Length: 431
Image 1 (cartoon, rainbow, N blue to C red):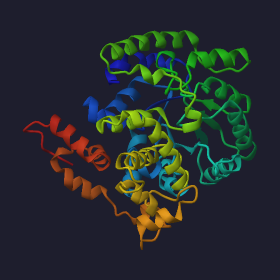
Image 2: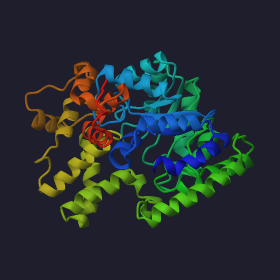
Image 3: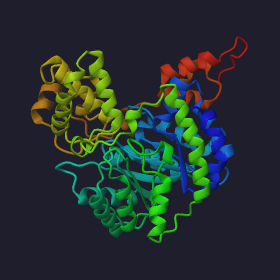
Image 4: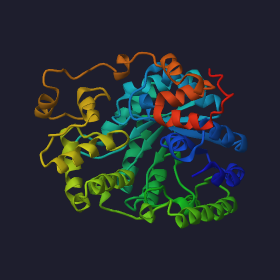
């Protein structure tokens, strides 16, 4: 979605009564540079200018920031500082492995520069994921100084009973406000959010109705109505929400008419409760198989994803682990021999370069892949050298502000191409 598609609605959104607007971070940064020819920092400035009172929120992948690998501490600290400087109030920070060591630097930086640190727990299921596992994570994050907590259910597999039980236990053990984030992919989201509220959660993530459901969130207006009937005060203005829905219906129609929005993203797939594969991951799997003319083998790949995940310690299927596990599963099926081909990212994960695996990794797999190398036990970022000055020199005169250097450090190819497109002969000052 281009900025111009959301601009007419921003002032209305500011009047709706939301606790916060998540408007940055995650994949939106990369998409601006790679597909929309927009500067993500300038987009944030424009949003902040239009949204004068409602808090702005972003999603931060801990030491991965907005990318797919760990970045050095100097990049993490400066990125957090600049995000807050440009108007972000709340930074929801998570790690794909729930390895809290990968959150330390982000949390310190958020607190240092005056932001609100929301520590997020990646929710998933599997033999090692009982309620005490998540409660211990919440207590650890609380001890690290976060301002609030979040349950992040990226696949939409948090069922109503599990939502009620998990929220109940975390609220019993922790004193911090707790938000719940889930997706509607499996069809349970509205029920799960209601049970989470009944159990005492303090905030829920929703999406305006035209852009809700399926792989998106539960519809805002629906949750407002349900909760109001049960006696909760959401603080939302329904007439404003209806006006927002009217605007985004037109936006949705435009994207559908131009074949920029696939109708499948609004499908409900209860099988995800078994496969745990998020919608974006599923579409990527199909694309990888299509390129090899093997779309008909998607069923085998889904089973292979489950098997690979169990062998590599049951990582939550969230970026970048969802991509790493999926790539390995596809390679196993296409090659016809399991682990004959091992992508570099999987090798790095097994070595410990992404952090500590939540569960036990197959000893045989470790021996076959790493051979004589040992699994690292240090915080992965401790192995990284400072990067900012090196990145500044590499991008050279194309960068006109520190934010350009940070964009380049995260996404070098996309940023270089974007900055070259903006360049004029006399515009060579650099930073």
